[in-house]
Length: 334
Ligand code: AHM
Ligand code: MG
Image (cartoon, rainbow, N blue to C red; front, side, top):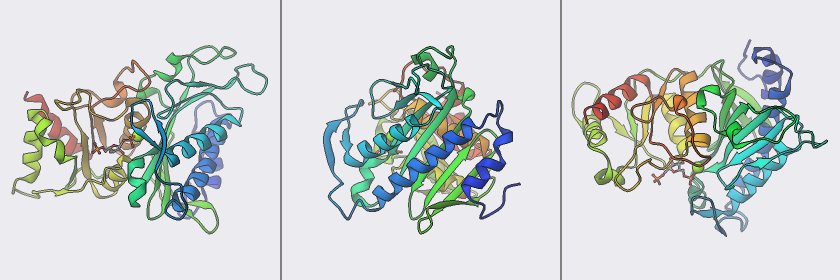
């Protein structure tokens, strides 16, 4: 039974039996993410104090400037996940190819693959705005005892065994699901312990917040333009409030608590939008659905999309069920 103020460590142990094929490995995997998140949190919090902000000089796979903290977070998560005998492969936003982890005896006996965006929204760091980590976990599908393959990473979101995010905000929270609802834990920085603060999180069925980068309005498809106008019309509980941080985890976290819709649609300048299916949209969609919300590309459920490449992008419309369905109605008109 989840108890407010229960520590994440206790919670993981108590709920281990909920996992199918429970052997303790998934618990240990989440534990290692918890540890890495504490290390990243420590670094993020002192970003303004030491000369650690700014570009690391490199560019990542998508040609974007890599921030030093992106590199740091990527290293920490990869190192922490590699050190346990649980994960056979990692795909990260910051690495073009997936990483194969042979295991201590090089026997390729580890079961899980992790897909991760180690520090999402990192362009916000220099201005002291919240950033996040997003992770997605699958059981491998290729035979144990052989090196992990790309197909182990290209599984549809509906096969995820766990997913979560960490938000480095006014306080640091770890929110995750193993398919049995969503629970949120807040870090007590003095003790270095996460405590259950948001048990059984629920996406309100309806809401009054819409989150979209309206600067891209002219490039949006007509259905999205019409839906935005609908949000702004005066009728019933509209006009809605516009809130957009530009940090996916924070925007969705807020909407999950208050009720709202988040959209990163396709546009005339980017046919598939911006967000990455495997380590941004799928894990967020799993959490959102587990909390009673909805996530689609405007037409198809995100978690039913069949991935074709590690870094592919998809349009992303998610949030309160009724709001997403309304947006889909507008999109379907064209
Ligand atoms: P990143 O992975 O390069 O950090 O980009 C993802 C971020 C999301 O957190 C956010 O929702 C979105 O990009 C904002 O994009 P834009 O600035 O185009 O509105
Ligand atoms: Mg990202």
